[in-house]
Image (cartoon, rainbow, N blue to C red; front, side, top):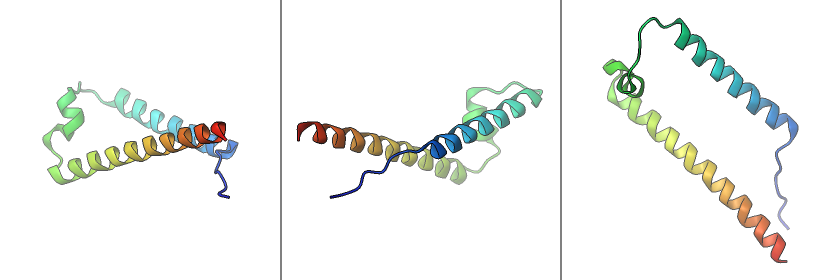
Length: 85
């Protein structure tokens, strides 16, 4: 039989630490910045970033979201199958 992987407290600790760290960096940079950003400036790097890194970043974000969704669907499917048995 296959062994189901579970998320332990260490995983949650690392996840929360990374979220706090990235939120802190974003807040620091946002507060330290003296100019206001529009949505276009935020999404497209003020027009100063070449298109390839922006496209690659968007593709990586999309792939990460699809992977996360796939894992959630897999877990739900496994739990439903266990309840049927």
